[in-house]
Length: 259
Image (cartoon, rainbow, N blue to C red; front, top):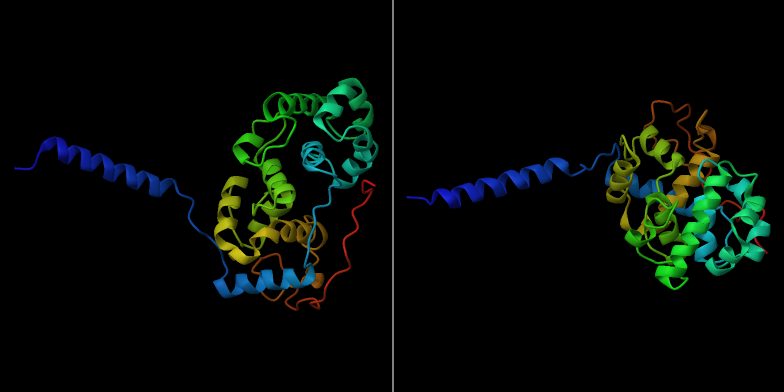
């Protein structure tokens, strides 16, 4: 006769596995593997070495720039940090600068008072807990004040060369608009993109998607006539089926770059 306790344990394990399967984010995309390969092959030809457009000089200035960029444009942040990073490019120098003087440098950026508090707090934590160095692990980065998962992913990619997917408004819009990796939340989109993007294209993928959303697949009106994947795109908003010529774009110029 089967042991009732053993039977109960087995049932509990089965229920646990079933719940785990239900919680997992399913792979969802409107594109075949071959189509996804072709999409990112074209992006790789168009922009062989895509770059983020926030000017920075080291991992610390990158963390600060990304934290300041929330609800602000990269160009606006670059304009404000051009002078700031010349005098405060380490946590120690930022603390010596002080919150009041920091506010003077970034007052043209939205929510600058709260952002100044976060920059000072994250600088203090970097000094106190990380020896003044920016950590290269996501779970440590997100502990820093003003640093969320998106910021952490940007830093891991741009400062430490890790393949991550920083889902900003552009990527969230594109993933849903063209049905590449639809999701209701940035976390869902991130998880699905990491699964559907071919591995050998993953490192540059978030920059390709951001730049595509910023300059071609725009929020108000996608410029389908300038899109190199117009023939592959499955968006119901698409206005053109003829792809733009597949040529390498001129090198990016980061506006107001730090000298």
